[in-house]
Length: 369
Ligand SMILES: Nc1nc2c(ncn2[C@@H]2O[C@H](COP(=O)(O)OP(=O)(O)OP(=O)(O)O)[C@@H](O)[C@H]2O)c(=O)[nH]1
Ligand SMILES: [Mg+2]
Image (tube, rainbow, N blue to C red):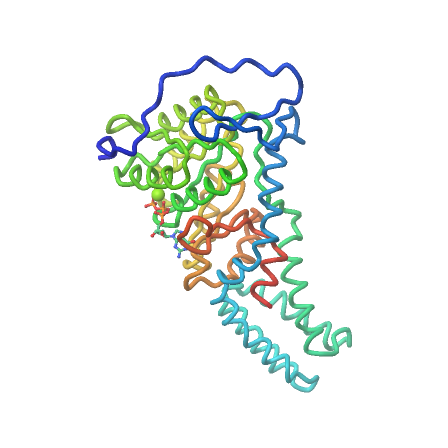
């Protein structure tokens, strides 16, 4: 049971509420260790151009410098798509139909989904026969451009939207075993590295082991955690307590873990609605983000899951996990195209740093080097 763990941080007594800021922009004091504090480079201003907007953007910009990592994560997909380079190397006009058939197959194998694959291949065919594309390398560039267009066409923003009220609240949801807790731990690590004061909330109250698992992440990332103090506590009450604590103790972000649930289980989906409401009652406007974790290895089966969660709680962003394993990266494109929900992060391993902000351009360059 979680309560026997020495690492567990029980809720400390409530400190007095912080006094309101005297100007529209205050510097955030981020505690480091002990009694020392350091001043964050972010300014917490009222309005959208404040701390959270900058934080979301900064984390996003970091993606560009992490391209190497994304490359390693997508190595399987790259191997699958390498055949395209061979095909295009020896391409000549008379061979077009055969080459495009094989290209179509490669995209399907990489989980681009039939609709998107046909869209891409037919547009290439038109451009080849109309003389717009005259060489293998031009075809490859056009292929990359059309994938990038699919990922960006709906104007979806991939950066975190954290609003402007502290604490920002992020709920992580999804079916069992997709990688919610791991992604939440990795996200805590990223936010912490940016000087953010992060509180974890152990909202998976179904299994004691779930709390233990999150406590390990709290230790690894140096974040505080709120857990249920006894058995049979409702998830909504743990989350509400955590968000209140976050508000009272000046946390910047509260990350809420939730239990895995099948999208077809009505009562469990209703529980998620209760969690969302409880969080919103504790801090108005919360949750700022509801991130659904989708297991990349399930391929296109993830689509109905995402649709259902989105219908019930309104998903604001996706985290696609396990893209380092046997996942096929084309599913990223299918998900964005079919659901119109932005992918905000991709999971490319089990280590602390293996959560990458999703950058469409870096992604396209990673899978079609
Ligand atoms: N290779 C790889 N493994 C991952 C990734 N993300 C999570 N995992 C692994 O997937 C397994 C399940 O991860 P969890 O974080 O426990 O998943 P969960 O969604 O919280 O599971 P439940 O709480 O049981 O619903 C663990 O073994 C993780 O280490 C990833 O990006 N890559
Ligand atoms: Mg979990």
